[in-house]
Image (cartoon, rainbow, N blue to C red):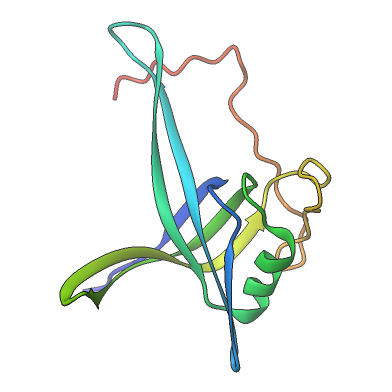
Length: 143
């Protein structure tokens, strides 16, 4: 039977990326916040919940783009796969779930983040602007 492991996220960096340089390449790691917002049916007020994701960029060329251009607070689009790994700390087995990045596009417009101009993505196409729904549209979906 076939299976698919694909994750697509649009969110904001919670801190500057951590870059780890090795003799055979670089790895970038950062936390990404995704926020879901909805209108409560009973109270009518807007509510939201934020999830935090551990993101890992293992491709050296892409890690170098992250190192050079991506900063805390910037909005990014990522595609990748979810992976859970285990490790031992102080004799106790622990687990961590990470998003392994295959593609990354910076969504923050050029010049809106001081010292962090937005480059083109690794495919050479311009970054996509993040657009929310128009103000007049309500989120009254029945599910």
